[in-house]
Image (tube, rainbow, N blue to C red; front, top):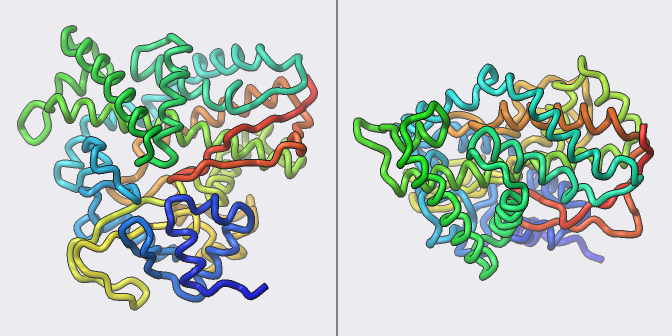
Length: 398
């Protein structure tokens, strides 16, 4: 069969359902785009440019004055979605929101959470460890971030309510303009509106929600809509990407049994996780809007153009990472874009990494010889990340 042209490949990846179009070999397709036409236009979703090389993606991420987030970061953007600070803002207002939120997500701030996260993880594992099998996304990967976010950020500990919230986030992370997603957006808005309203009626208590509803930016109080939008993006980020990263790493464990021993070694954990994130980034791409004439890889872009900065592709660019499509736990990570770059570097990265470290420490302490149920094909939803529909594994208790 004749190989598709570069524009055809790019169009497949530029559509909002890229991984449904190319379920296997998707990174090989992107490699061909990087090599042949690294900035290529698609007419899908109103038209935008797919940007696939590392240096171009890095330029987009670190230059908000030229590549703005103010028109939303999804492609297509849902016009009914609220503005969600700080991710949908540019400096200087974006910087003020970051300064308001940063103290709750630093490495020092989240380190004391370790014992509680470990306890929450063990309670989940207790429910399936003796069975020798489970559907991992619903049994562990999704409940753990929900419980952690509920406990430390939202002040909610009802697992059923948190899992319903998690299911709504999953709908939004896929086709965010679908009817299902419209209902999920309404659910999420109502959920965080109630949390913000309750916090406004209490004295300041030192928590994140309290700081947000009683806080100030640009010399004025944070508006109610800004409070709601900020809580929405915290929920979306906190419940989505961490769960997806846990599931993706488990798939890698089932493909490469030797990785199990590596992840049991605390001395290797940080470097190994960074390489796993590089190889398959928790967030695959983000959208931006061009604000002034600019060139990327010799391609002129005009104000108003939409660009898809493909982080997943950038992180496998052979020009930056030798043999970038291969896991190499000895490589340096100084140019890894998994958690972004510049002003919009992921604010929740310290908490997300901590959760994943603790999750695997507890999981691999209780089970071993993880295998995937190969009778069930791996199916992934579309969107900025690549969440699994389900992930059934079998294992031995330790």
